[in-house]
View 1 (cartoon, protein in one colour):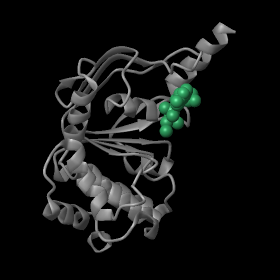
View 2: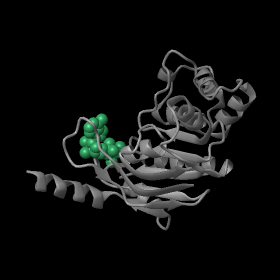
View 3: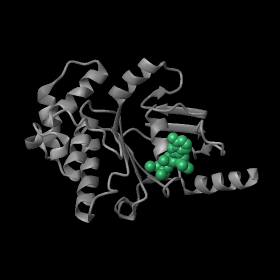
View 4: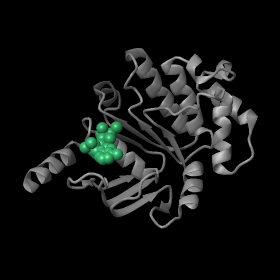
Length: 227
Ligand code: ADP
Ligand code: MG
C-alpha cells in the first residue's frame, strides 16, 4: 500500500520551487499508473516511495511503514525486504553472473542465500538458462527480465517499475508489461508503473492513475513567478 499526504521534494542543488505531488492512496495489491511527461517528477516520486530520498515535506506511508523516522541502516533493511525496484537503468553488476547478481539481494537484506529461490525466480521470468551469463551477454529485454527477477526475489509488498517499456519494441513492451503484472500478482505486491509511453497508458486503461503533468505545470508557474 501507499498513502501520501502533501508530499514534496526539493533538489538541494536546484534553486527552483519544490516538486509538489498530489496525494495518493493505493491499496495493497493494487496497481498504479504513474504518468507524466519527461521531467515531471516520476523518478523522483518513485525514489521517495522507495525511501531512497527523504521527502522535503509531507507524510508518506509505504507497506505499512511511515517513512522518515528510520535511520539509514534501518531504512536499507526495510527497503531490501519490502520494496522491489525495477529501475530504468538496471544496475546489474557487470563483474558478476546473472545468478550472483541475485545473490546480492540476500546480502543486502542480511539473509542467507537461497540458490533454489534464485533458480525459481529466473525461471518465472523465462531466463533460467541465462543464470551463468554475465550482463554484457544479455539482450536488453533479457537484462530487464533478470532485473525483474531480482526485484521480486524476496516477495516484496510493493513493486516499482520506472519506464519499463522505454527501449522496447511493441511486442517486447507488451511482454514486459504482462510479466510485471504477473510478477506482482505472484507475491500479492502492489505495482507502480511509471511511464510516458502511450502504449502502456492504452494497455492499462482503467487502472488507477497519478498524472504528474499538472505538477510540472505548477512548477513552471512557480519558476516564472520567481523571475
Ligand atoms: P521524470 O522521471 O518524470 O522524467 P524526474 O523525477 O527525473 O522526472 O525529474 C523531475 C525534475 O527534477 C526535473 O525537472 C529534473 O530536471 C529535476 N531533477 C531530477 N534529478 C535531479 C537532480 N539530481 N538534481 C537536480 N534536479 C533534478
Ligand atoms: Mg524518470
